[in-house]
Image 1: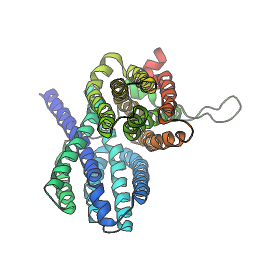
Image 2: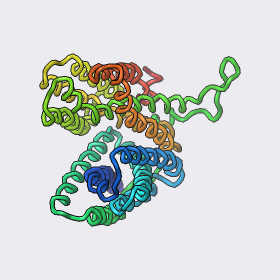
Image 3: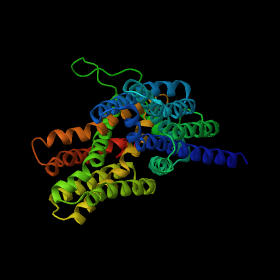
Image 4: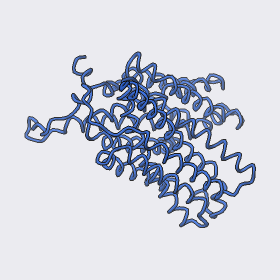
Length: 405
């Protein structure tokens, strides 16, 4: 009887975390689809908007770094509730803004809440996955994409119905606040894990001195940095695909705009589908295989794109990129969340923040390279980085597995 109650509790927590991920994607999509309306209301130029979006991202990184230690101290369940409430409330801000200054402040607040929610909901997802005893992290990230799709569809429908942006965002905020209040009691309380994976990962209380007398970098710190660098590369590739795929097809193959748009459609479709399938693959073959071979598949896709003279073959290349990238990030977050029982959220916040920088830097790096080489040739840079990720994929393995390998 007690076991069945525990099972029901875990299932409810899983559904609740699914919903939180979808809610986050939904709120982000509502902001994105209303960007043209909001820029018209505030009189913000495209160049200024780019700066404001960078400010949103910077505030998100701050939110991530602050939320990590807070989630470790007060529990991820508490932080999920607080961060989701902040994100829901602040999504109204851009719609209420009537000038550039107000929009900048509103986006900074929204970015802060979104960053805090990213860390806290992924930390809670690690707890739920640990309780289940099998990989389920990728499905959570797939629900984020599903929430984004729902938000974009409903946002577009509201605009077609000629709803005022303030009304649309206000209704969404109230609905998401009510949903958050209902979901938080269903989430799991953070507990100290006694699984071998976590127990073996906890570092020694004192750092050992190196051979030259210098203090060695703590083992867990090295692992966090390694995971963060892989996250940086994978999200760099994701950002590059999102911002440059359509333009690459149009410029390299002289395709029309509607055909070129299929490149990102192919990438995003296989990315979402791959996330729904990754948990089974990770359960069967392990996290290392997902990161290693996923990186190789994405690298093969980029290689195909670079040499392809035909649109269908190039679209296949972008589809392979989506498949390859779909499962890597969830495995990295799972690994980061299991490095230490008392610092899961802090470790994840470090991985998140550097990975997020990769998402922002990817499009910029490709853009800088196009000043020297054609866009298609510039894609060789992320291809080489993916090969490095594949080589270092063993860092995502459970600590005990690395010792006995």
